[in-house]
Length: 449
Image 1: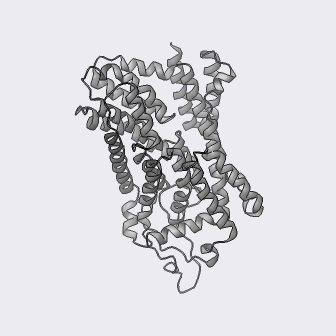
Image 2 (image 1 turned 90 degrees about the vertical axis):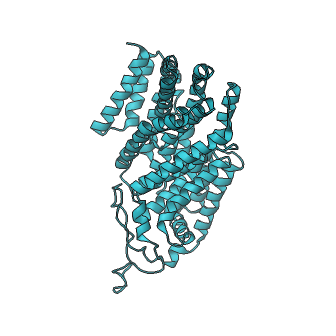
Image 3 (image 1 turned 180 degrees about the vertical axis):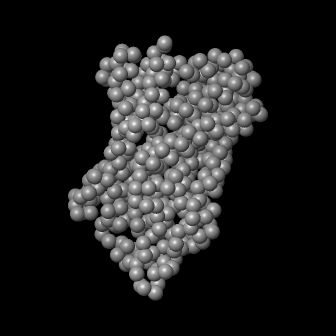
């Protein structure tokens, strides 16, 4: 049995054990990386740790630390209240606001994980308060980021268009952008309908200035309806009217002003000065902790450490696969198929599957060159093929193993993370199974370009 096949089978075993025995998959993946990397691939410790996602580790810790402080001092509650007022109480519009916001950020040049890191904690805090499915809100944020991710001036768009130019393939930056925008918009609409969006429309507007029904006579302060603590159940029935918010909840205290300023500074640092989102977030969190230690005392305990272990372990194992050539081996095997349309379909599936665990742009950078031989024959349209690969490799970023999916998982407050992780994994699996085939059918089979 080849080393590449052994490494793939071990990955399957890791998934099975983690699913059936409730062991942290990240810990299992670290053990697998040590075993496969050392015994099968002959890698030393440096070679095994080459795939450790240090930048993602810092982003997950930094962003969840900063927003833990924001939750502790009431800043996220204030932001949620401001968002409700912005849409005049129409809770159903908020997921679309978050979709548009992340899309605008990536379209003007933000890296997709940076946009998700900024928006997801606010969006999921809103979902918790109003009983919206966290899967719905998280998916809207991620798909929004990918909807704008291939604009001609975006990071993803610039990289892919550069690869196309370097490989001397026909390209169309506008088609690439519109293909990703349309695909993610359609997926977002389907998710909105399936996971309770229509019920939110039926719910109508909430009034944050009036007590909830049933509590007016007694004058009791109602509690906002949400998923039960420790549960990530999808809500499919209308929530009651929002509770009365006290002046303490809606006022801007010095700590909240400082936190809002920090969040704005994070956006500017990432988008304007191209600073690292994780390091910037940790720095801002430390400043806030020093100034208001009482608000921040428990924040470090709210960092999503199990999620950090899970994501870093799995990505370290994927790095071992990359080091030992498993990913290239699989891609070259598909590229050698003599039927161009079938090879194109399999490349879309490989792009989706690998991207669910690794860098989306990185896998596109590997697969587009592999597609060059049969694209040069003229039997497959290059523009459509590149667009299909781009869509297939990025819509799967809702997977909890991708950077964006990990950020959504880490940012969700008051949920059973194990259950939410499984929901994201199932949803990501459905996207991996369905979207590449649809992208291939719509973009490749007609022969665009």
